[in-house]
Image 1 (cartoon, rainbow, N blue to C red):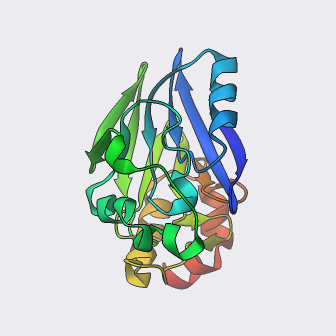
Image 2: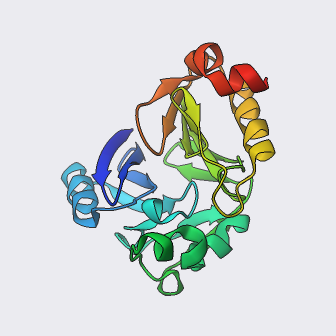
Image 3: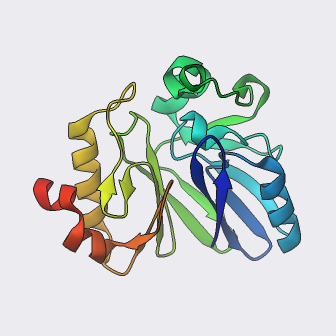
Length: 203
């Protein structure tokens, strides 16, 4: 797994998950040329793009490769609507989804080489927010951060939904699993169970 810290209108984490000579990109939010250059340097074939959600800071470079783009069905209206995804509010352009190969996922399993990627619906930050589990790595987007959780005051956000999503993530996976958020540092399930004030309040 590789982490790219991209500089868009805010810093965004983009992840490259690989097995063999193939990979998926998680949340290519900005700096398309940097993403392409990095993946080219590894000699990897890109199979698809995985979106944890469709806010504009996570979709700015979804046209970096002509591959399928996967997201939850509840997130489709946000992807296509600049008012909902923040593009209009912040004045940030993003690739036209109508010109791209958008695919729906909902509790599916995607395959990467000899391994699988589990898809877990974790709503709250947005109604279609999704986490991806690959090996012992959990990519949580803006649902769960190191020591914090995602905002719920954006369109379709819901505090009760994110409360349940946080509990589900931290109770379902072993303590040694890593949490990789859309912004900031990575963490461990054990660390969040012990120190995350939201989990301690909500569990």
